[in-house]
Length: 172
Image (tube, rainbow, N blue to C red; front, side, top):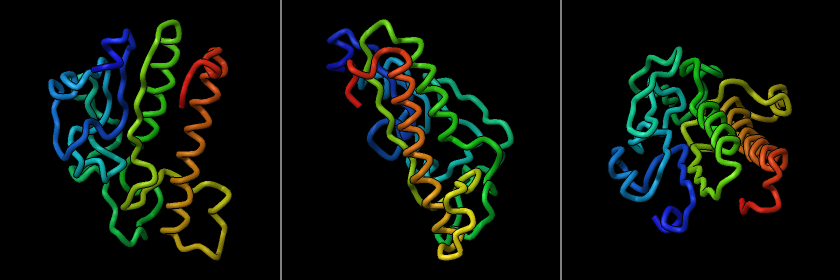
């Protein structure tokens, strides 16, 4: 609310709000102009939801049909990409980059409560740095790949800010 009152366009991508269950009006009431993600903490433990929420509107994710959002076991030994086709974190990074481009000429406050790394572990593909490491279990390879994806996504955000000439004017 404070950022909005100060003239900032506000956006949140990821695990929305601050609790275990929320809804669009509550998210707006806390001051978010734009929001994309999960309205339920429990569903956010799966990376392949059949749908997410965008500004109060439900939108389907291609190739994801599991009601449990593709949650994996705590062992993490399921095959890579077993939860579905559309990985939630990829939806979020695409939305974040689009938001930066669309709001480059105005003050903005963007918050990304990421799922990464978050258990149970799930990733669409193993990062090449870990895929063939015989010293790591499959779960460890998946977790390391999730950490690396988060690092790479922060890199994408930083590169986009630089490309837009906002890197020296933006706190990350």
